[in-house]
Image 1 (tube, rainbow, N blue to C red):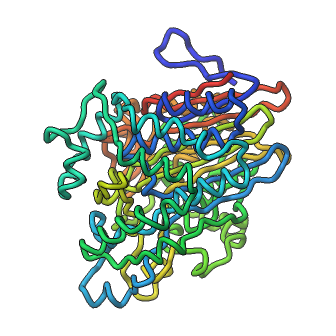
Image 2 (image 1 turned 90 degrees about the vertical axis):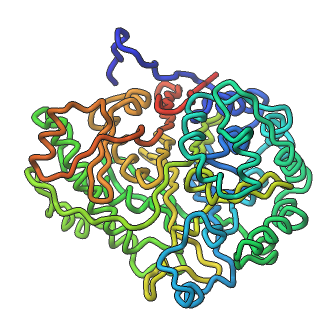
Image 3 (image 1 turned 90 degrees about the horizontal axis):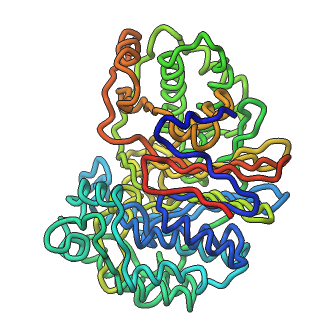
Length: 529
């Protein structure tokens, strides 16, 4: 790997040999490392970190959101956990068509699917953790009860997206005290959320899916026109499944299967696997162009096909086969941009991702989200629960596999990942950033495997994203490169905010060390011990 230039601003890759955590918030990383040092394993630490972020990053994630994870016990093959929420049983497509819906409004009760995070956390701790839930949730409870200080990126996002909570009286009263978003350094508490977390620590998943919390949320959603019943909450279950995988540079990239967009990440990397991105003759514009063209192909298939796994209309292995991928790859020209499909679905950038490796080699890649900033904007004040809006990922169209329906899982953007080599986990990583995530996985891997960068260096590289008919460039990319891409036919724009946020931990099995990185675009850090 390349040595970083110590004359330039930046941070070194984190190195340790006993355990490591990488998150997008320094307090969450510290909480995870504290759990590891206290005898907890990777699962305990990851859930502790994401639970804490559900308090201190409320616009990004929460217990009213969803969760996906890949977990590999030391020396074992990874398993995937799907903690995404289902539509209410009364959510029939005909109802929405008769009401004149053409899409699910992202700030409405119809966008709220049953939150899956708490059941997912409880299943992870109950099946793979070492500590009890009370110890795991202690940092989150303390932050909600005693308060926490706002960090710079949290202030930026809270202010930028405050209109999403201004619509609802209870949401505005809590999230916009004194009529504005809190500022960096200001202290925030949430006693109602602390009480709910204490109940979950004591009574497990039933404290959320049955009883007062479920009753309050159901009544609130019904009062706004939602179709939810208490039985939708009581019947909810997260579930384990087998990861899907594809080859890239001789390694195996593992992703959660649909209803997440991990399949798109596999398609993009499989397409790029046919190009020699180590070729010194390739310019920055060439690399961005190839990434954009592979992204177009992967996302076109994604938007047509990904849905609830019970409604899949295709064979995943066939789609990822060399025969299938080669046909997509052959359509890519290095000189000319292909026509881009205009995305007409919801977009979002609000998620937290956590990676943890413990001293025994147990590894977890976990992601948790409320979808858009502040989710639906609907807040249950007695329980302190802000509700996600994943149902906005459904389509309202007869015959589409991702059409809304009773108990269905919607298309999901959040995707944890692992990279395997010779049957061992080489890297646990994830990229926050909504629609960007699949493209971000491919970009991260090309920086590490094609350019020999460490996880921090790879995270620090300028990013681009071809989506919605436009190619967005971070302003750290040169004007010359922008003009080059425009000459190839891309509609290019400067990104109005940083693209995504990466966390990654690489395992060097030969030397027995861990190498971690955390994105400078967020407030977080990677720490080891």
